[in-house]
Amino acid sequence: MTAGDLACLRGARIDDPVCGPFFRVSAMFLEPHGFVPVDGPAREFAERCWTSLLSAMAHTVGLHRPGSPVGSALAEAGYSEQRFVRLLRASDKALHDEMMTASRYLAVKAIPFDWADLVRLMLSDSFAHAETVRRQIARSYYRVVEQSNNQ
Image: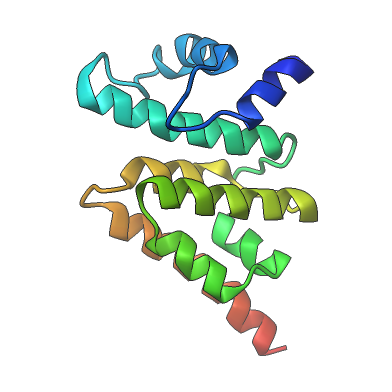
């Protein structure tokens, strides 16, 4: 990906995803692997989620570390509990905004994390399993917070 592609992705908005690099990534990786439905409202929902995710990922290039929970990374980085709770309670546009804030915070602190957690959080929004995803992220955050408090 070029610097221009990354800049376009960083500026992508969920309400206006007209960004060539987004659609190239979608056509090359997301659609062939079934991450974007063929059509209808489900496709629009998935495209909004992936626009948000790819935008945030463009801010954290080089910080993906499989197996490193995002909740743990946020706690280690000193992300405030108030902001963390806002992230977990948010949905739709607010979830996009909170995820962007959290990912930029981790980028500034250069704390690596597993993007799979935020992918699951975004894609589960408004679905029955969203609570399970949110609880998993919360457990990893508070586990690190409690370990820090007990030292």
